[in-house]
Length: 449
View 1 (cartoon, helix red, strand yellow):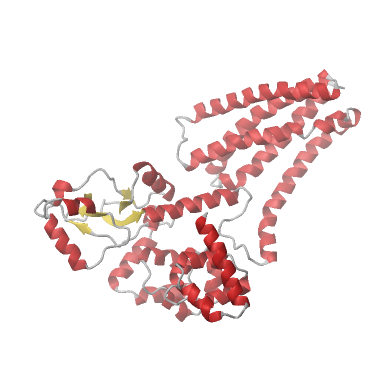
View 2 (cartoon, rainbow, N blue to C red):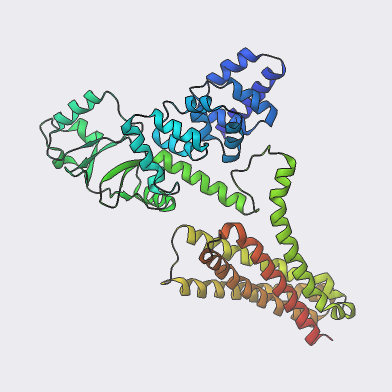
């Protein structure tokens, strides 16, 4: 909350300076901010003001700021930069951040950036780029410190002093054999608190297991969360240490996943620019509006089938929205639970049937309970037990089907390689609307006419 209020206050102050023509003081204020704060300000400004602010950013910070902003904002900033400016922006960047940025740079710029690196850094960068960006290899930083298990702590200390600096976020040094295969971790706390003549092998920890480079980022998050890690080694297929992941990298993944879940629920992309041109934003959002329109017409077609029934029993039209609405909520609950279970890797063939049975029983129990409530309420409202019985029976059917749909839809979409968080809600709404209308109006036609 404090960070958000600070950003808002900074944004207001910056706008005041820009409006009053205080460019010098505005530039000094920008230079005092962290690249992440500058990125947040850029995303919060309309395109014209954003361009003015970007001109004030120090060239040494441009690369770090580009890494922090969303993809669409980054693309817009890059389009307005010259090749020489882009190359200058990449100088001095951490290799893992540079790898994230190179993905969005033009091919000609990428090649020139690679040529500007020394042989060792170029090889390390190509190593990171070889892995998927959503894997442990894509998250890792290749700047690691390794030592042998058969040396003393005194030798390690001399080696560290000779290096002159340590990678940011280092809490442990990785212990490897002569083939660079991972053996264990030497925590800095042990290095500082044990006798200088102690061998590394005597105080190193073997509890922390390395993370294979091809591990998906979601599983990396799970490892850090459940093992309370601050950093972890990354190994290739031959068990050789190729990099390390620190907790700040994992926090970025968690934030991205949270934003993805929130925006996908509305059929949007978390990387969209809030100040993108109106036509571009409207076109992007039109896709899912069109899909929803098609599903709405499908539900309307079901209602049209029972038009004669509605004409004869007008009360059905009054109560008609109740059943689909309750089914939609019940289905969304199951859909959310199963989508989360898929994301966390908690569901597979061994437990899928038990989860399905549980969701069906929950849907049936809720259906029975709320059917009684709705039936009684309908009788008190209209004084007709027959209509109350019809809507109660329709409620049981739709909540039962909604529970099944909430279970089956995300698994089916996942098998089709479609993001359940993106398309699951639209499909579920269609199912609960169609089944709800069909059950209610069908039972009405069968028992009330």
